[in-house]
Structures are given as C-alpha cells and as structure tokens.
Amino acid sequence: MTDPIKDLQKQTFRYYYEDGLVEMAVGILFAVIGINTWLISVLPKGTPLSIAAWVLLPLLTIGGIIGVQRFVKNLKEQLVYPRTGFIDYSATPNPYRWVVMGTALLLTVVIFFAPYSFLNRESVAGGTILFIILVSIGAQVDLRRLIVIGVLSLGLGIGLAFLPGSEHAGLSLTYAGSGLALIATGALAWRSYLANNPLPVEGSGGNNA
Image (cartoon, rainbow, N blue to C red; front, side):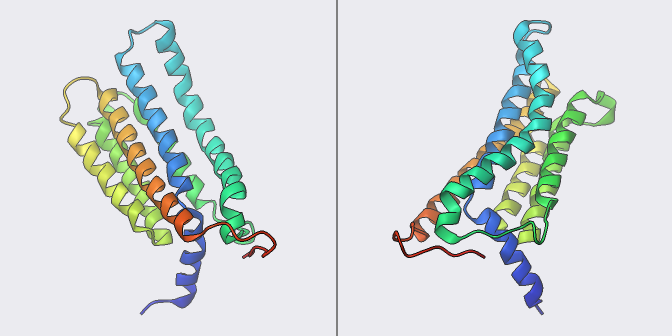
C-alpha cells in the first residue's frame, strides 16, 4: 500500500530532476573528470601537462560539485522556473542529492591515490560508487533512468576491470562513460520537458510552488 505523503514528497523532489539539467551538468563533470584521469594515465610523468592534470583532479573533485550546483541553479532560474514554477527547497532542505554526488567525487580521488592493495580494480570500485550514488538518488525520488544508469555504471566498471593496461584508464573510462550516459538521458529529458512546457504567454503570470 502506497503512502500518499511519501509519494508527494518524492514528486516534489523529483521535480528538481525532471527537466534533465542536473543530469547533464553532473554528466559533464563526470566526463571531464574521466578525461582528466585518462590524461594522467597516458601522459609521461613529470611533464607540465601531466603535472597540470594531477593538480586539476582534486580541484575538479572538490570544486566541481559547488560549480555544478551554482550552474544548475542559474539555468533553472532562467529556463525552468518561468515555465513550471519555483519550489523553495530551503523550506524542506534536501542536501542529500549534493552530499551523495560530492561523496562520489571525493571517493574518486581516494581510489585514484590509494595503493593497489587497497582495491582490486579501480574501475570496479568507481562503478560501485556510481551505482550506489545514482541508485540511491533514483530510488529516493522515484526516477528510474538514474537507477538504470547506476546499473550501467556498475556493469561498465566490472567490464573494464578486464581491460589490460593502466588501472587509472579503467577508472577514467568508467566515469567518462557514465558521464556521457547522464548527458544523453538528461538531454532527452530536457527535450521532453521543453516540448511539454512551453513558455507561458506574456502577461498570463507564472506559478510558484
């Protein structure tokens, strides 16, 4: 038996994800981190580009989640709220979505710098982290496409464990592949959102929730 209160809460928080902007922004961040990790794995050690990539990794990880949050906020203010209204989440704070994303990025750095004995394969660990993060968010707001991408990330991480060569390369491809999947599903959601929610006629007013 469903709980109407919980269903309403899920619907309220799902509104934050339904337009696909969060997925695209986080997907871009994951893809950039994946590409940066790949560069570290292939660039000769000690070169300026290699050093720059090493320095950029923690900056992307620590600062990326803050940048994504502000970027999405600005986009929603310009493109979403005029169409379907604004929900003040500060009244019912839900930092969970950013905590779990931030945890995923921080654990990326931990995995990257940890000794080999700490983890069997970096790609498996990275895929498992993304699985936990995306499935937990998808289940919390009842958004199945996030659950599907979480399962895809886990499968990708396991599959890339058999990739010969650098441990970092498998991890980078896991994050980059998951990021591209998020960008794709986010773009499809954004297209559907625009089709179903055209801008209101000027003077008709908007709705605030």
